[in-house]
Image 1: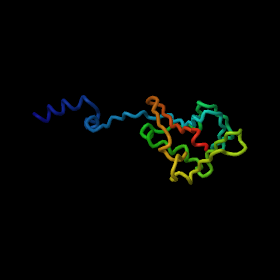
Image 2: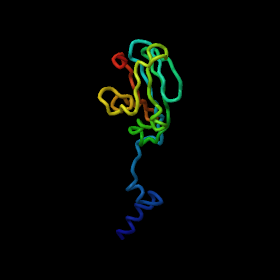
Image 3: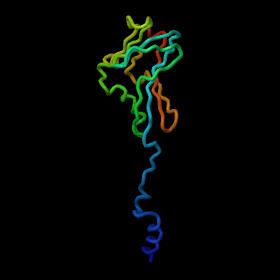
Length: 147
C-alpha cells in the first residue's frame, strides 16, 4: 500500500521522477557577451596599437573596445584569458603619446609576472558584470603608466 501511494505521488511530476530531485538549477545564462576595454585616464589624448588592428586614437576619459566575444555563462569569471588566446606572443599593447612614432609604453606577455602594473596580469583589470548577459574587463592607462 505504501508503494502505491509513493508511485501516485511521484508519477505525475515528470517522466523521470528522480530528475526533479537531483536536477541542478543553472543560475548562469547560457551565454554571455564579454567585452575588453582600454580606458584612457591619463588626462591627454593617446594612441594605441593592439594585435593586428592598427593604430587608434583614444581621447582622455574615453574607452575603446579591443575585443569582444561570447562565452558560456559558466565561464564568465574565467573569460579574462580569451582575449589573449589568439596569438598572445604577437599581441603587445603599445601606447603612444605623440601620434604613433615612438611608444611611450609597451606591455608584453613576457612581462606578465614582473612587478608593477602589467597588461597581461588579470589583477590589473577591473571586471564588471553589467547584467546577466553582458560583462566587461577594463584596463585603465594612467599618466603614471606612461612615465
